[in-house]
Structure formats: C-alpha cells, structure tokens
Amino acid sequence: MLASEPDRNFSQEELARLVGLSPSRFLHLFRQETGLPYRRFRAWNRMMAAFVRLNSGDSLTRAALEAGFADSTHFSHSFRATFGVNPAPVFRGLRRFEIGP
Image: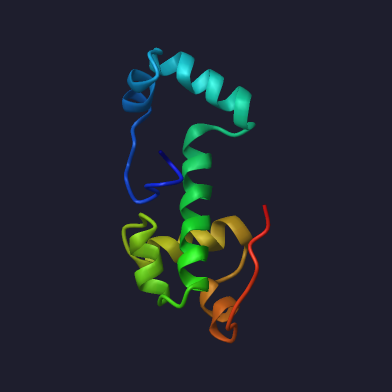
C-alpha cells in the first residue's frame, strides 16, 4: 500500500487495524522486518517515488507533490536532510538517472 500510494498519509493506526494488530505491535514488527522505523520508511518511500517521477520528466514541484510532499520546499528540505545537498543542482543537468534497489 505504501509503495502504490506514496502520496497518501497512512497512519500507523490505520495500517495496524488493516492487519489486525495494535499500533504498538505493528510498529515493532514493521521495524523488525524492514530495519527502519515506520515514519522513516514512509519518508524514504516518498523520496523514491519523487525520483521516479523526476526520472520520467516531471518538474521538481510536480514530482514532489505527486509523491506526497506538501510542496517543493518540503521535498527540498527532506532531500537536503537525507543527502546533505540541495536537490535543484543535482537534478538540473540530468536527463536520466538510475535508481538502485
């Protein structure tokens, strides 16, 4: 669900209910299985969704919005926090890029 709808804000309570677990048990098992806390995984999933959209030719703003970021500034702050650089210069001159597993 997270991969197919990265722009949707699935709450931990909603996902826990869907799989028949308490929110705390869901979070525990989620981290155990993925190695990441739920919120960090969700943020990374959105970042990857934005990369896919950028690679297909969307503008930075459109890619950010369609991936679930509130706006391009939110995406830029998240990108900078994750990778330590501003996204605009990174993507400005690229025509295509590869996203690894």
